Length: 196
Image 1 (cartoon, one colour):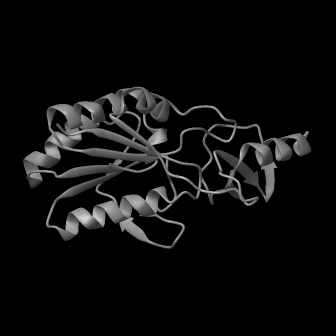
Image 2: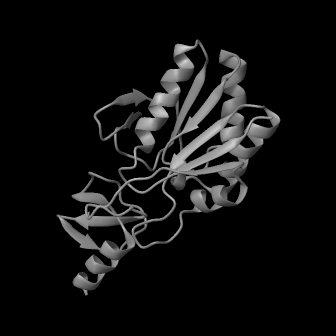
């Protein structure tokens, strides 16, 4: 039976780079892969962009109303068997879309590997990630470090170079002077207390 995988990590843990490596491995073996990203992720337009400078064009950009199940079935009808589905920035997807990814893995027997954040810059969950934590067959943390050297678990948001701890849940990295930094718990609270 195919499975639904959730690979999560703080910013800069190599999620997009790893996704592109997995896609390359499948394609190198003559297998067909479908790359998906949510329309919420404006960075790179119709491409996945890694901090290492690697880019790859996606096959499908989905918005909050897209039935991924219908789109995948149509893709199979037009292009034939799919060997794997890879989803980047999955935290931006809706609960029902995560349920569809689970259904695709189970009923269409296509492995679905999702990459994304577990929490936002306020330590709150994203809808897509919360659902994946409940129903994914496999959950794997992708590790990274804070600049102090400790393991990073959290995401600090900076606007114009200064950490902020309030605002809308979604602000895309490198857009409107927004950037993110992976932080350990100690550094997160240090910067949060400094902001007060």
